[in-house]
Every structure is written in C-alpha cells, then in structure tokens.
Image (cartoon, rainbow, N blue to C red; front, side, top):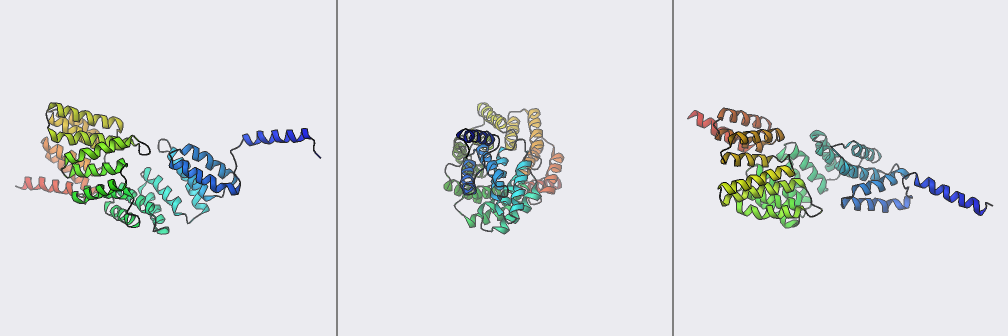
Length: 366
C-alpha cells in the first residue's frame, strides 16, 4: 500500500503535468463545452471560444463539430485575411463528417471574404443542396453571388431564404440593395422597410432603407434612417466601421437638399472625408466628395479623388458609371464612353451604364 507521502508526490506531479497541456474534457462534458464555445462565439469572444475548442480537440480529435466551431472562431480572429488555419479546421470537419452542410456554410463564408467567388459559390450550393431548408445557407450563397456580380442569381437566393424564414432582416436588406442596382426604387424602399421593421436595432437594416430612399430622390426621408444606423452602429453587437462610414457619408449627401451654399458644401465635404477616414475603402464617399469639389469649382482635386475611387472600386459598376458622368460634365465625353463600355463588358445588364452610353451615342448622332 502506498504511503501518504507517495500519494502526495503523485498528486503534485499530476498537477504539474495538467498545467503543461490544454484542458482535456471527458466525453460526457464535450456537449456542454461545445455549447459554451458557441455561446462565447455569438457574444464576439472568439478567443475564449477557440481556447475551449482546442481543449475539446486534444481529447477528442475526431469530433467534427469541434473542428467546425474552431474554424469559425479562427475565422473571426484572422488578421490580414490569413484564414489558413480556419480553412484547415473546416476541411478537417468535412473529412470527419462529409455531409456537414454547416461546415460548408462556414467555409463558403470564408471564401467569400477572401474574394474566392468560384470556391464560395460552389461549396455554398452544396450546403443548400444538403440542407435546402437552411435560411443561412441560401443567404450566404446570395452574398457570394452578389460579390461575384451575379445579381439575378443572388436575388433568387435571397428570395429563397425569405421563403424559408420571412422574419429575418438581412436577406430583405440585401434584396433592397439589388433592387436599387436595377433602379427599382419602390421595391428597394419596400424591402428596406421590411428589414427595419423586423430588426429595429439593426443599423444595416436602417442603412439599406436610407440608401433606397436617397436613390429614389427622397433625401429628407433618408436622413432619419441614416442617423439611426449611425447611432445603433456604436452599440454592440452591431459595431461596424463600414456601416458608420456609409451612414455619415449618406447624411452629408442627403443634407445638401436643404441648400448648396458654401457652408453646406463644406459641411458635406467634411462628412465625406470623415467617412473615408473611418473606412478608407468606401467608394461612394469618394464619388460624393468629388461631386462636391466640382460644385465648389475645384476640378483638379475632384479629378484626383475620382482616380482614387476608381482604384478602390474597380469592379463597382456604380462608381465607374458615376465617374463617366463626371467626365461628361467636365467635357471628356469620349473618355466617359470608354469607361461605360468597360462597365458593360463586365456587367452587360447594368442599366444605368447602358442608358448613359445610349444617351451619349444619340447626342453624337444628332
């Protein structure tokens, strides 16, 4: 029989050994740990979730759900688009569970963030086929298609998502944006209003409505949802620099309806500069700033700002079309037509560019 002294030594050595490795959880405890990790992830605490999930995997390396959730946590923690570890975990989850639609959904979301359109669309279509009743899979497929410029297909995916669950706001918000790009302002406003009604605190819903109202010509009506989006954006869990930038830019642009004197133009220009500072890749703020500079008579600076906007938004048909219209205003019609033709090569269905090009061709013919 071991002595009391030998038992004490055994306990100390065991304690030291346990401190040198991640915590390992018994099989009966895994479910609770996975639930806790998911809760932490939903609260934005990806680091804490990843720590728990690493511990689960040490003891249970064949647990596909643990790999899948760890991939999601690592994607949240990824710096400078370094998603390699997250992708590896999702692929491991699929290796262990080839029929997992959710691992495919997460992997598709990562590929969308990396602008790998073909990969994201292909794997999200698989997710939808495996679980055709998944709202999130159809929504994420819509986002991937939209990012790839396949707007008609994206619209169908968002409509499919809404059929599955009409009470979720984000698909309505995305539909609003797509209708806006087709110049269907009434439909865009209606979808924006639905998004706001379904999720009042959500700044992205208010932003979708504000953008639709602004594009439809209701600048004064757009101010309130822009301000609501900006205010809500600084309250968790919706903190988002892009939403803040879009809201500030939209407010500055909408307020020009009240008058475009020197003071109003200066304030609107400052709003655009603030939006660019918050989110330097937000193309519409550059377009608006350039237009304001043109109104102020500063063509040279307006040119420089537009060049930056084009570099940042090469695949944005709206920004390029706005630049073409600016070129026409400054007497550079042939340059404008060249820009519009390039837009239509990439987006043959983009109505604003087609109409502007037809208008310029008719002017030349007459």
